[in-house]
Length: 551
Image 1: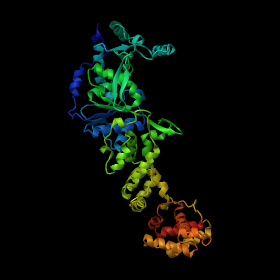
Image 2 (image 1 turned 180 degrees about the vertical axis):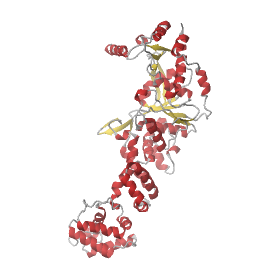
Image 3 (image 1 turned 120 degrees about the horizontal axis):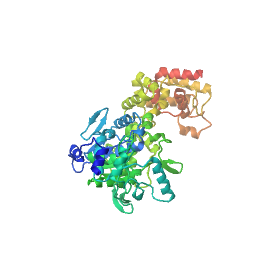
Image 4 (image 1 turned 90 degrees about the vertical axis):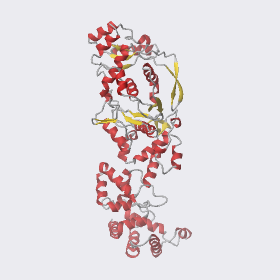
């Protein structure tokens, strides 16, 4: 009995060679500078912000080099698979217009290097594993979980390095006959890679973020095929797919840096060049005076659904990530306001190599406010309407009922050199403009300031609406009438005059305008009062005043 017999016993139905698949997936016909990247998430739940950052960088690398960006579903760990997760991943990519050139979705394959779902590539992985068994670079391991746990405990007690290697690799030196006998007797097994590495030796590895790093060789006989479903482990599937799909650059979190020796050894075993690796820093959050990793459990902003539910514009989320992806992005963007992020030249060397990357929600808020302020009123209306259809039915009904009226509201202090920046995200908007709709107007909590006497307020309002209000007035005329109203009722028509003669006046024109503002909106701070008056119109203004009289 020999390795060929063993491989045929384990994989009796595999009759193709690895050369067959190399021919099936030939080198891509691309320019030398073109990058082939992939977003390869596991369908195990929501899309994490860090995963999205990875997808964004991969997309930038491919699109700015006339390369290929493909989507691969890494579902070999079936026990962790969550139904509908991959749909969410595709949905997020579509929402942010990060569209793969190659993918597989709803039984539709786009691209010549599929299947792009790993569980459908079982035969390919088995072919590669069978080859490794044939050349003596892989073997079946019959150790039970209990045996492995006991081995680990002994290693810990003896302060030895943890793992399945060297003299700790019990099944490595079983004879072929023993292996075949165990399999025929139905003893469960996994397949392990037989490492040729020496942990006492080191090699230089060039990470595109950190530069040259010295790493120990891998000597672990790691599992490459599981026993229960005979699917490959992450490491082996990663190697086979990146090899056959001709991935040139792999972007992943810095926590995968320790896996580099395993992946390098796999590529070396097949005498092929490994991809270039970009290990990006962890996303951190400030908590008090400390920084910690953004948590799936603690932090709502860890999930991409948070940004959709809040109604952050997709462009704002991308811009906020770009500011931490490359340290010089903000300066570039300030100097190139007419360009988009894909015009920026991304450099892995300008990523944080140590200490992680701080993700600041306040920075996102500022970016989002700036972005929303530059939208036209009509475009903002369309975006808010689209968002409200899923997240705020009450707002949706109002927007559909009053389209032109709402656009006028959105246009207050918008078409000017320094537009108003009061909307952080779409979920903010209803609360900020609710007083403009009779259906949402709440008259209970008026925020009157200096003038609080009900009779005095009523006198101001009645005098204004009966004598001075005219919807056709331009802003200068309106303001001059406000001055006349102030003087008639014993208030200074300018604040400077009032401050010089406090005993002479009841207050100033500012107090008069505050009374009108609060009676109409219940709030003492709002956008431009003249614009609000013009949009509301005389009948609605009179009704708001009457509501106050009866309050």
